[in-house]
Image (tube, rainbow, N blue to C red):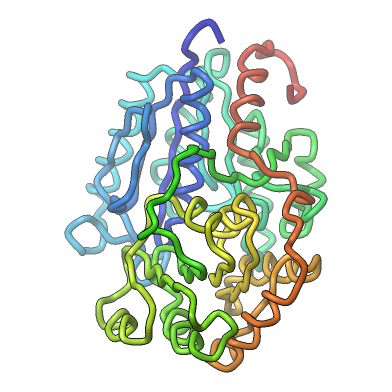
Length: 388
């Protein structure tokens, strides 16, 4: 592009950190492609957050109350008041006016973030008054949360039709189509674009020897996964990789009590590493949950994997992803009852005996593809009803 196209990006995380890290990867691709990006960040600040090249507007934080998404908690640990929410809304509208973007991207909304309607619907209304100047896109992962009431999914379609120019699905339809987890996908097919999985951008930096491991155990942000990391550490001595270097990544939010004693089991324990993909590239095996970003790192690294999805009656996204990968022979899957040292050691030995996985069968590079799509979109006349 010969000029800097302005992009305003909205992201809000309430429990996990995956939404933020996927957004970081897309923003990196946008800035490398010449976009001028401003980010509205509404969740708790992450210790390893970075948005190089983008201007970040940190809102007063909102989080969920231990996973209770109906109760939003402010930065002081109290239930967010109406005044607190109104302040966030007003700040967002001021950012919109000051930024004057040609593209607005909302992460998850309107498929998710219904708790944030108090600020997102006013934002949508404000943008709708400037539709000749601003195109609006939803950024969403490939597997949605199932089990919504029909009325909620119906509302999603209505919001998309009213306010949005397109939906960027960060996945490969040959692996899973949006219709698998969204019942009205056919109604928005004309405005849906698949970018591929948002895998990390290769930096070319090499790791120091102290940062190289044969087995890497990771659990995302660390709010979930304590059973997996402890069982995996205990399994080390029973595996064919017992004499190799193991690293446990507990994430920034795992409680100290849940981390205690892990290092006594012959593993190195860290909160996180700066570049998980680079760490996995030098490893023989990954043991992890089945979150979007972790799986994207595994794909890009090309390593063997044991995946233990976190799921319950309401949260099924990781389970579906794990089942898809296991069915293609790309990973060994563990169920809840398998998160024991004995079962994990069996899974490790099985993964190491399998042929190296061919991750290239899944379309990747979703961040760069998103940047290329938006480059075409901004050059397309506003009157066009077709995706570029």
